[in-house]
Amino acid sequence: MATYRETAYGIQAIVYLGKDGHGKPVRPSKTFKSKKEAELWVSEQLILRSKGISVTDSRMLLRDFMHKWYEDIGSKKSINTSYNTKSRMNHHIIPELGHVPLYKLTPSVVQDFYNKLTEKGLKPSTKKKIMETLSNALRYAIKLQLISYLPTDIEKESVKKNKISYWTFEELTAFLEYTKNNWLYIPVYIMSMTGMRPAELMGLQWKKIDLDNRLIEINAQVINDKESKELVLTDILKTELSERVITIPQALTNALIDHKLRTSFNKRNDFVITKRSGSMSSPDTFRTMFNKYLNKLRKEQKVNLIKDGYPSDEIEDLLIKEMPPYNLRHTHATILLNNGENIKVISERLGHKSVKTTMDTYASVMPKTRTKTADLLDNLFMRKDDDEKHKQ
Image (cartoon, rainbow, N blue to C red; front, side):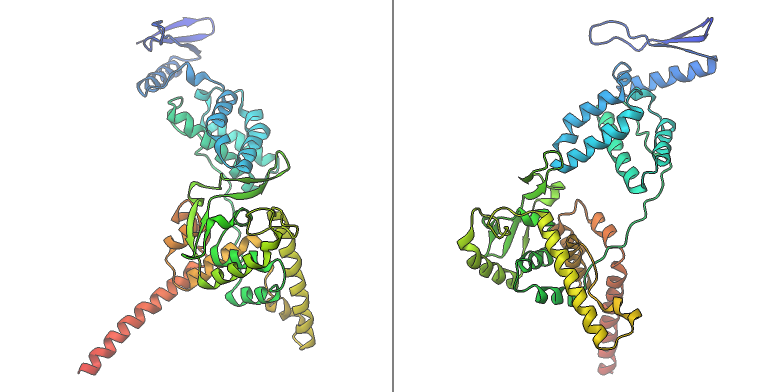
């Protein structure tokens, strides 16, 4: 039920929405320039009420709700994910939108916010992360029946996905051969055979490896805490499915047995990968060592190619590709894909949150596997045709 009355400032609409938890009538009111606008507002309030959304609660400012969401949900993620989320809230979302009540957060308001991010010169990928944080919080508001829809469905700049870089099997074996007698060999070998993330590899402990049954349990990682600036072992992983058990080949099992025997005299802890001193190592140490030896190998390859008389414009294509150590994970996945492994199995090994994530990540590799599928069908049916001809 609603009533309207003319005032010196326009048409005032008063709508009755029942009683609150204390038995008091809830009668929000608002003044508009025209009766049509007033009637539209009344309709919106009645719709919100019919969906169980409290008008009083939906007047909560976004800044207050963001803090509630972070406490309830955002802070429960991995250490650095939580840190990044809080940073986006405090540096972008709250300064621009914190004063806006939830019920006034419309696509138009959010679009203006996004446009301001663009004006600040932020990269599309950065804007995407900020919008994901805002959307995740507002999905929680929908669950709590504070708003009825997600207002972040706006026009956004598309994010150009960088083509993933990875090594061929030949490049991988060349690097393993080059590093066979130093510290780097085992971490590179484990990553390339398991698809583990560098942080997961640094958190791997011997008690999580079943050498008899060739299984590795992944349920911890070592990270550089951005807030405390300390190296931390944590059991909170990137996604829920990051916690997994994967099988390992016999070759890796043998290498791990040898590694365990060689390093047993210098163990201060149970970590598989440690510093030379035996203490916990970090993804940064691994990355530094990996880059150092990759650059050394490329320089040596270049010198040899020049000696062999290769044209200068062909040399770069003949060198082992530059890539970060994280991409050993991509190398593992693409080797499996190109050899016909099931995409779901690969997704589970990588600990992706869904098969879709795996397919999106390796879309550029999929055409090769589709060609192999076509060749497989060709072989099957051509063999069938040949068999029938022989019968005749």
